[in-house]
Amino acid sequence: MSEIADKLPEVTKEEYEKFHEFNKEILEEFLQQQHLSPQTLRQYESALKIFFRFVFEKCKNLPLYELKPKHALQYQNFLLSRDLSSNAVKLKRSAVSSLCGYLEVYYSDEYPLFRNIYNKKIPNPPKALRHEKKPLTPDELNYLNSELEKREEWQMIAYIQFSYDSGCRRGETAQLLKEVVNYSYVKDQKTGEEKNHYLTHNIRAKGRGKNGKIRKLMFGDISKDAIKKWLEIRGDDDCPYVFVKKTKTGKLYPLSPSAFNDWCTNTFSEIMGRRVHPHQLRSSRATNLVAHEGKDIEKVKNLLGHQSSETTKIYVVKEGEDGVDDLF
Image (cartoon, rainbow, N blue to C red):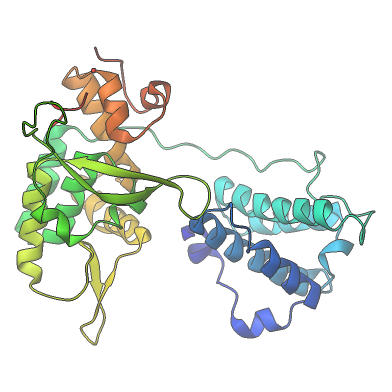
């Protein structure tokens, strides 16, 4: 969680050991829920540990079942005083509220008087100013890639080309395997003819539970060539992932999705002279296909993996004029 990393230090093992035993037990139990995605569980774990550190320091280390709405308000004011964004505060508030709801439902016999400490009387944090939604145009993308090529940032170029081409999310990009450079064109199931795009291996997309929604991403030759170029520069190694980081010992590990945020903030934004972020590549792909190339929004919906084209419309400037064959 970038907001926590920027504004609030993570809870150390030594700090965690000092928390009330009940708070540690209920937290560990809460994190065993199988219907929550791994990403959600990581966010909840970090947010709730920070909350219980606040309880330890400011609320006499009370067990959760003894906390009251006043403590919830104190915690929220504490977060706001640290200049966290409203979204970051809402996420941490939501984590605490979910844990309280868990206690209220499953421990009603032991603690019949306990109620969720975040009730309707506690105001939501003020809404933050939203950044203007401004997709990257094809010309801007070409400029960004040309500047990165001058810097020989081949991995970053592969990231931009694949993320834009496939319209995928950053967490999906991080799962991409090197084997995709050996894939052949998709074949029409009826005619057996080759189409002009490829499908990845199974990718865990956004969704509930450990497995989430499994789908294969579509990409074209531009992406494949950029990935192949990066892998040629990288050389042979045992790491199966396309996007990696190298340790001081020379060992390669797959990049975490947050690394793409760093690239966007520290490199891409500096080159473009305006804010660039990972999700912008996804929305730019949708906007450019529909608004500038006149592609059918139903095709773009399939590319992005949306269940409804109504969701896709949120990404684009205007509705275009069905399949995916001519998107690449």
